[in-house]
Image 1 (cartoon, rainbow, N blue to C red):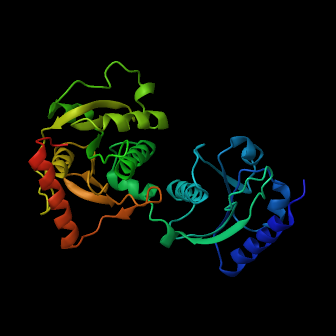
Image 2: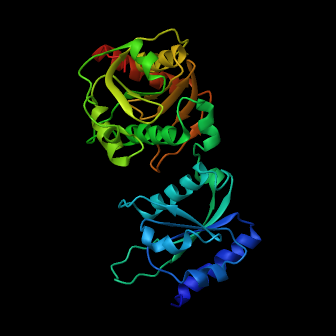
Length: 328
């Protein structure tokens, strides 16, 4: 199987860019079959990543030491979002450092043709500017509240809730991870526990379909509690822990999240209903702040913010306190 002339030209350009920039890797994003041996020959000397939704497409490359395969979930996403997801996974799994330069080759032009070009576009991506993603090193800031894969899943869930809401409506909530026994001892149920009676597999937040169901539950009043093993244990919780010294501008939701993280070894994620931002608390202190921008899962390390941002959060929480006496 020979490569189309356009693909050959792009591969040659990618190889030259890797040498001249220099770049750290080449990412090939495609959903059509290629002559992988010829691609490897043309990109000899380059670190090679391939991302595809169809696992059959990259099956032959999984045991090939020259290739790093990144699996994408089979979702109908635009090419740019699929590329972002692939790069995020590479950084999160420590396959690439956050400041890497990557040459990406992909099919970026929509077509109705039954046989589109395998690749038709090329981009040079500077990850330090393009992505601000929480890496495994950042996740370790959260200590041993839960394994990294569980924390990643909860982070994805929190940012999705903040960015998307549910059925067009914004959602504010708290996700508490770890130290379940002590958290429960300091809290009480505001309503029935919607997780009761379901098997562990049906409550595992590392599964995408489970996270989708939890988004529905997040519309209910109260916090959600997730064990360090990734199993959702409770919802509709009124968090009774207090004692965190919150800076000016925060209301009841963030105070409750900070309080429970101070009195237990759990980590708490507070999702703002108005802005969709996610603030992560550990030991009673905010350790991370995540802004849910249009591209998926864009992360920012915790930093001091302007009074304007603080005033916006204060106004939001005052509205919540006036209309509801919930704490989560």
